[in-house]
Image 1 (cartoon, one colour):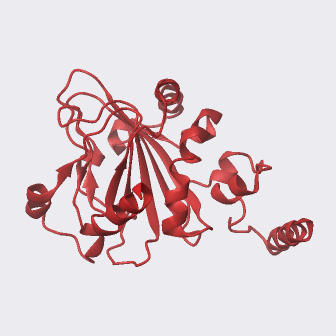
Image 2: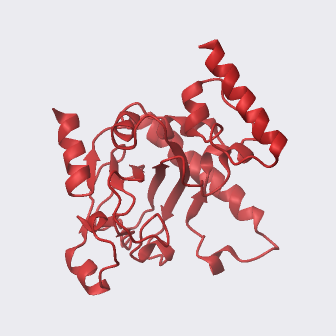
Amino acid sequence: METKHHLEELDILGYTLIKEALPFEDVEELKSELERIWNIQEKETEGIFNIKEIAENNIVRAPLAYSESFIKAYNNSKIIPFIKEVLGDYFILSQENGVIVHPNLTHSQNKWHRDLSHMNFVSNPPLAINAFFCLTDFTVETGATQLLPYSHKINYEPSSEYMSNHGISIEAKAGDVFLFNSMVFHRTGINVSQGKRIGLNHIYTKYILKQQIDIPALLNFNAPEDSFLNMLLGFDSRVPTSVLDYRKIRKASNDKKKNK
């Protein structure tokens, strides 16, 4: 009954909150790993360009490529069943990004946006679902994510006045996750507290949509033995780079079918 309730909210409102998706120890581990990976990624741009100039100074891109710890989130047992209910049995992880919001920091995520960029249309069934894990408490003071309910049902961008008047803040505890249709307009609030607000966002999509960053390439094309993870991370749906590569992929797919 609870699953039906969440799916109904996701369908009608465009979002739903699931409590205690991650235990305390996992929250602490992922939070620590995001901070560590951010330091690595920040150093990658030193001497090349100023990361603040491209509004990337609070985003940790594709942390799963830096640590196996993130499987706890992107393959979370409380979340994946909902993704299957909405997207069907075949879908991929399009992106995984950490968001670290420092006090009084203005950044690109403060603007209302959809996570399927440059797309203003209505899709039923949905093409993509977000799963945003709270790794610290999300409150109005810490800059909780703001969503515009029902906005996945309109094929245009509402006025900024309308969004400001009707957007709501999603307040949640560390360990909670909120799911929302990726066509819902949303933004990060301004953190006016004394501490950081840290979250971990995932976008699951139909396989026809490309990944933000080529995850198989990030993982050096080391495909997992687990068939579900193989699908989820995009190994089964990557774009071949040559005719021979295409046929190798077909050969591997045929071999899998024979071995079932």
